Image 1 (cartoon, rainbow, N blue to C red):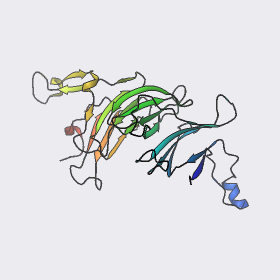
Image 2: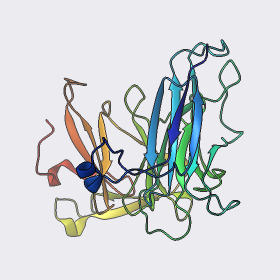
Image 3: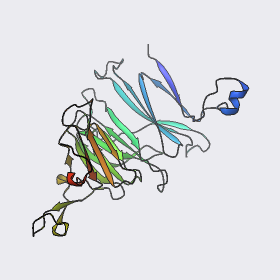
Image 4: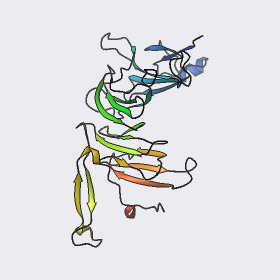
Length: 276
């Protein structure tokens, strides 16, 4: 038979009993909202930065319905307060863009999801989703309706890293993928033009002789890592982005590379470590 489980949107800690314990961990009240999940072997819950909603990504390794050999995945949005029913929570299935590529069974696999991390941005906090078979589609979604509001396009990507201030995004293909990275400006809805340093006309290493060229064509803005990427994250100030190849996942070509927010690599001569 089909197994079911319930995910509740309730941030309070559960009491283990006893009056003294109740003083530290007050008993939880009724769940703000809940969702019964069927055929869910695993569930990943991501709270929004404002802690008033959560994304629940469920996955199964084998689809008991027989519709998919590779299992199935589903994404739900749990809201503390439903605008259509003030004072009540709700849970909805996140609608995926029709442009996402379906698998052989006609379903759309979900690769990953993540919230825009800055709770102080104006308006509703959105979230990103990567869905569909490869090349997968990355999309930005409304934080209340779940509807897709912007498409980043299809590519061999499996991760979206959002800068701490919430404006810049890197849509990347890591792990078993080739390590391609696209640097986006969420406010402008465009890939960020990249400023590349070229040797100056006068030659030599004097920084006064350096000049810059700006790359603007989207086809030329994708950055490819020279080795498989294991770790990847933004700096706290949202100005640089770090990728690494480390042990034990990879025991060869280990190193750490730093990129500016526009995708331009920081010259290794300016780094305090030696990747060689």
